Image 1 (cartoon, rainbow, N blue to C red):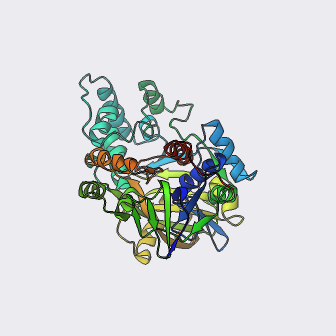
Image 2 (image 1 turned 90 degrees about the horizontal axis):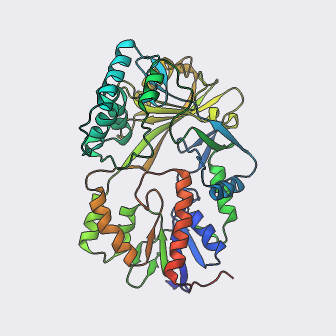
Image 3 (image 1 turned 120 degrees about the vertical axis):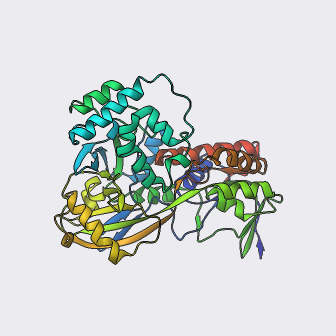
Length: 442
């Protein structure tokens, strides 16, 4: 067992947050080491190539508002990127409507549109709106019974994999558009002239989101140590224990999922271990689908709330960028509502039938191949134990020189730009914790 010299900062995870932290530590001249469990950097922000088709880990799009982060991200990608106006739709009741559903009932069957509009107006004028106890109550209060019944509750049940009654409303203020009454009225008659929501425009590398991660990895001041994850972490001695090496550190920046990190802590108090075990996250199965022809609709992604379809969202990479598939062909991602491992031969005919109904393919014969993929950590569940659990775990980690950051390191719901910012902030926090005593990079 080798005992290495002490490093000022050790970083666990070379996803976007971990690499961003490394980049900003390097800018500050702070010595550090960066460890990645997998054999490649990027975390979820990678692109796979298969028979000339390119697939990300489902939709990964850059919504860049911070000027500094935008400049960095575009620099890492290089010149081969596009900026895209969102084309997203909802498929329900046999028709497409614009996103968000709650502001675009035009085109729905008249009885459905009326039910949604009537419910929204009643909710809008209801003065009795106590703080919602869960996400279902949030939907009913803000959108009314019709919108909640036809989209918000069924779609979010499929997305999160649990009932909206189990989820607090705390996660959604940024990500769930709350239209004004005039938006809902205009959307009922087809007069909405603007796109609502935080994601109306996005940046996308022409060859897939993995180009961002590749560019970041090349820019780092230190080598990414791939295939390396500590078996245990001694928080008292501040040491990472690998099978072949002990790495002393002053500050640890961890982007590993919080429950996974706490499992690795030697001698963590029982209340911290128990609180970390209460943190919930859903996994996700999805399909990478290659088409032998173009996608039948010029859409980027489609939300599917109805239970009769086995998927809740479908996206088309090759509508983000035509370089994501061979000429005249298309690549899709299909996110599955069922969290059990899919039986592809049994599932694919149902998927093909749904895609045909949605006019995304002409017939099942257009599917060249489909691959089953799994994301172990997909969505953090903001259940009713969420905040109490974090209030136990996070102060313990902070008190022991551990900075947690990222979507799973911070245990939150966030965007790719957030991941870059989390890394920048984690680097600043680590340097502050060192008190100016960080060893400089040679």
